[in-house]
Length: 414
Ligand code: HGY
Ligand code: MN
Ligand code: MN
Image (cartoon, rainbow, N blue to C red; front, side, top):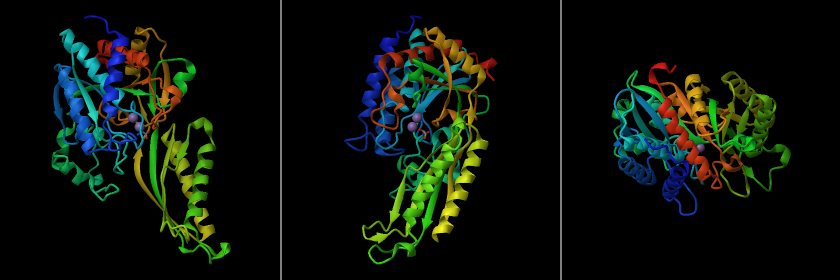
């Protein structure tokens, strides 16, 4: 079997990622949400690439596109093709394209492996359309949360209805789950979305663990009033209360920088939303993460205490709704070592680092031993159209993934 050429692999990956990036709901920015016409077009393009690579293609009840080759227990290689709003083009697609090109290498060589390969293109990792997230990988891991089916998007379309409109039947969701023992391992190639690899001058890294996340919806209720006639000391301004709570979240997250706690208010909406009305109601989101579940839950409780104190002091009401929680997931030590060997095999020193971003790997780690290969990205920028991974680095990652597949031994993985 000819040795993989990183430059060729990197150039092919760049071209495929560029083609996928043209599929967007909006002309001026990249928006590709779960179960939308753009998801359908992207899934069809990925399915074509999988067939051209010699993989048998199917699509499961959640819309995950699956490319399969070989027999026996499965080594699953996956990532997602949905995006955030105004996204970069590498977050997700790099992992799917890397899987297709790596699997193609073995199909073309015609040398059967002692296990089969499944390449998966998940459709709902970002949670950009519905309050649920990871629903496609959760279904593969056998943990789909049926209580998310009534969750509606901003147009009032529920996840269940969107699945039906996409041609799926929610009753089939259990069929997407891998059978016990069927999956021998999972590996995901992903841009780091952080600055560490670049700062250390390393193209590739081995992920040690993925932080857990808590996502909350906060509703602050005050009293709408005339912006011109209500004196400042008599106001119950929901927006100022929410603003003070957002600053309190920042203070909680900044308290212990060593424990990697981060807190973000990503979305805020004031109503009734007129220039001359004191906001009577504000809804905002909180995304809180930390290196351990204990630290994250402690920080979340502290934020809620602070928010309640602020509401009481301002004569406001505050309601908290936790709509997403995923625990910290450690990556398989055995697979981390195999991945480290594969990075050395392509001539680089492996760096081990945690992931502050969530990934499908933290769900698939519930199904089987999981690993992640991080790829350096310029300035650590992500969830931003300036996101960039170089052709040489992507080529090295795919060559390392091929080396990982060659070294992978299902029976010893714990
Ligand atoms: O939010 C995250 O960490 C991931 O990009 N979905
Ligand atoms: Mn991602
Ligand atoms: Mn992302």
